[in-house]
Amino acid sequence: MMKATLTAEAEMLHAPGQSASGLAAAPVVRGRLADYLELTKPRIAVMALFTVGAGYLLGAGASADMRVLVHALVGAGLVAAGGSALNQLLERRLDARMRRTADRPLPSGRITPEEAASFGAGLSGAGLAYLLATVPAAAVLAAAATVIIYVLVYTPLKRVTVWNTVVGAVPGALPPVIGWCAAEGWGGMGTAALLFAVLFLWQLPHFMAIAWMYRDDYSAAGLRMLPGIEPTGRRTAMAMVLTAAALLPVGALASFIVGGSLACAGAMVVGAYFLWRSFGFAQARTDREARRVLRASIVYLPCVFALLLIDALVVK
Image (cartoon, rainbow, N blue to C red; front, side):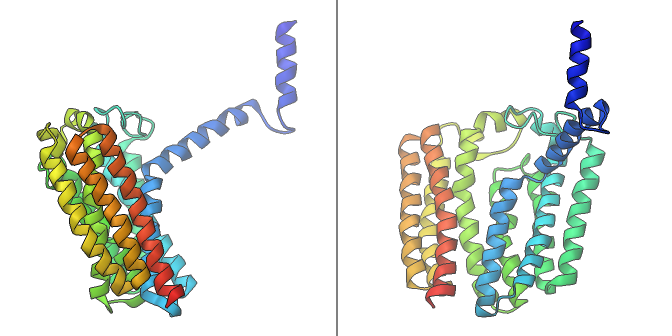
């Protein structure tokens, strides 16, 4: 009787013409899509695309063409997604040793290396081809440099030297250059270099804070990060303070030249806050202080770029 009742209830739940196997397959499909999405590191991609868009709008100014902006975002997004997938492919064995990454699609076995390789290479290739067909060649070269340095240089260096963080900051600082080149081609590269410098310096205390918080995981995986080889945190703190201190004048100068006095003033305020939090870590060197540095970095970047856009496109 109970079996018959349960069967009847199951049949009532099915939509007309939909089989039980169809219902069972739906979560599997959603799970596979979620796994592939995770390979693209969507949160990192969103931040990168924000700076791509900002770089384009700052470069194009009043002559901005929304179609070109969309082309730049689509192409750069595909390249970034593909690069992230290839990065996870190369680091799958290392990820399996760390608690925070062990459940990623590759180390958990939900996606095979062959699938990830095809997915990553396909997305990167499609993104570069799309950019080549829609935006100036300078933007394509900047995007190609981003994925090549990220996957083939930075990723293997993480097991070799603590300087990998500096090398990794190069592809991380190229997205606004991609956007700028989509608007201006090779023109105004000096200004694009200022945007690059801001993002380059910003990444160093940002990633040092992350490396400190997850130092045990990184050490267990064999990654050469500064907090892992110097447990006292003195050199990590020094690196944070020096780069945050350098970011203060560089960010203010770039904001004034690209934007104006409003952006410059805002960059000085959030830059001083970022530096203050870095000094806080230097004094205490705890996970709590490192997290405060990380939060300050997350405040800094969108604030500076938002003020740049407001100053350059609205105030001026």
